[in-house]
Amino acid sequence: MQQAERKSVRKLNKRENMDEIGTVSSVSYSYQCDLLTSLNHIFIRLLLIEIKDILFT
Image (cartoon, rainbow, N blue to C red; front, side, top):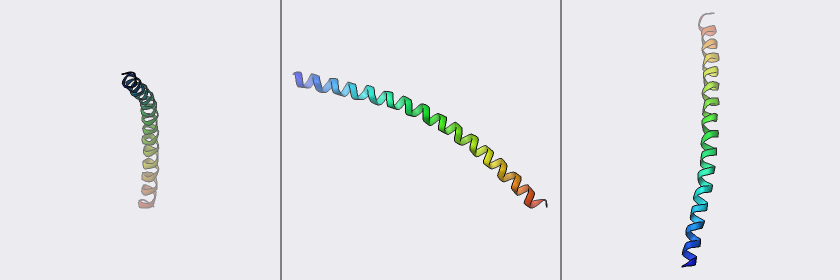
């Protein structure tokens, strides 16, 4: 009986740890996505400027 209780407590602890890790990783992931989208916008603008220079010179 005690072993089953210990196992359930371990599972709960693992789940809590996973939840904490999940929230941290999701926050950092959304931050990375924001960075990537802004970098993509800058990169696309630079590409468009280059293409305009090539086409209209």
